[in-house]
Image 1: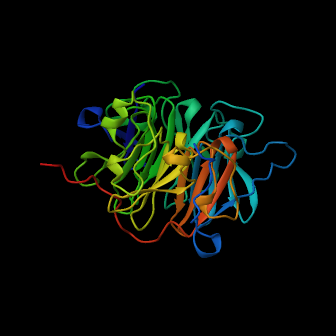
Image 2 (image 1 turned 90 degrees about the vertical axis):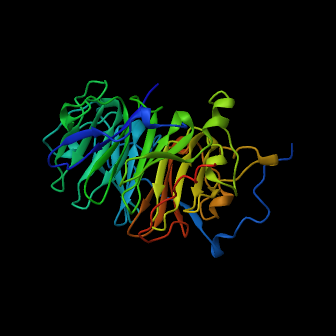
Length: 371
């Protein structure tokens, strides 16, 4: 099905315009064991499983988280299966929006904790302290202002194609799965079932360039902040089509545009310009450096280069010695440079220390065209 990403510029004005038009896309044996040389957690990056405690008076734990973001040491995780968004901070869990007893879009104009959501996806925070939620099942984006009040920010609640230009609240969205905010406060929406091919994740780098997980095309797109030109920075579209569009796993150590991905759902960019990809059906997190080289940084390939196996996390170990199970989202806290993973089918949240970096660099670009 088709999908589109939207840029809602100037949230105060609430204007929505398409950020991406599909017509601009020119191209679109042995036992499974970790590598013998896997780094020791004490001398390199380390993966830790974060605790998620049930809300007081309920038995609701974390179930199928599909979205994650982080700001100033607080991790916001979409407890998608339970229709709530929670905050994880200093080992404590609190519900930010939604209730365990209800679903669907209710409660706008009141406290977010008493409102209801339906299958919330990605979240994002702006510099003013607003929290944006892709309320996927309700076909809207919700906003929580610093006073704790929840509002409908974009979408009518009826699935459909968005208006080319107009008020965000008047635009129809279709299962939006992620949101991102740039330094100017512009909000980008992964409107998953409209144009492109199911864009599931969005992120912006320090220079305002937009990255899109074009999931059903098994590629990552980049939209230049200055020119609006869209290019492919990871994934081999031609190889994917030759494989019937089924995705694959290949390319580590080489150009990211020659690698294969399998239904990538999420993206994040650190301050050094490294692009992190939730390579969902490969059960892995891939990294693309600013030079365009790809590697697997969480989980590891199987025998003879087979895709990484699904499995439980190995908390306290090196990320390249731990499994994941269909991770849907990845995020970086810009204040700490800690990487976070929504490990969806494990119903876990993981943090990776010592991998993401600080800075204000742009992310990777497409390689020059071959003459």
